[in-house]
Length: 228
Image 1: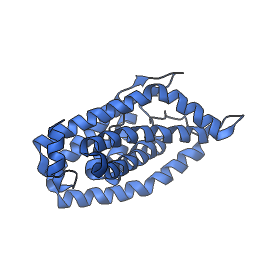
Image 2 (image 1 turned 90 degrees about the vertical axis):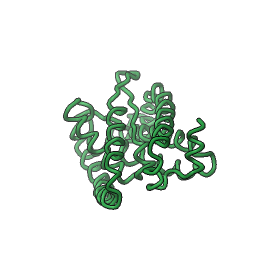
Image 3 (image 1 turned 180 degrees about the vertical axis):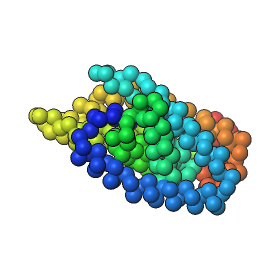
Image 4 (image 1 turned 60 degrees about the vertical axis):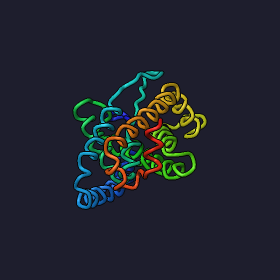
């Protein structure tokens, strides 16, 4: 999800900034509302942001000189929703660009859209869809896994739009980028799903009241998580 500094043409830099901006503005409003209604949520917000920062800072070599990363945004999306997670993500990506040379300022809009907007939306929707069908733990695992993979599908599409293949155009380029990322990203996504599920299990045992306040867990889900 970290497209490097200066890699995208200016047209696409502007496009992704403009596309991401409304989501971030709405996310700031949601964040303000949540912290006003639930002041005790601030430590959990900080933890969700730190979780995303640590996981997405891990740089694992892929093929042809590229690299893959976990995203860590599934946790925030499940607890606080995708809007708030988009704000966490843009902060995480900005710090990584400035302090770790990971991503960039010109590509911040594109990276935010893939990691901070599409990924959390997919994770949130998967969690809500599967929780009552497959159970709490499976829903968390699937949400974090598919949210991670959705980020890389989006990144591949962003790169394909900016650099279509001479023969075959955007679709051929998209397939090529997806093939490059899939080598390392599929197992990474599964690992991220498992790690996120285990963290939820621990935190549900520690502070179930916080999760109930955000309608993440109920008594049945709590008992199920404890029995993993």
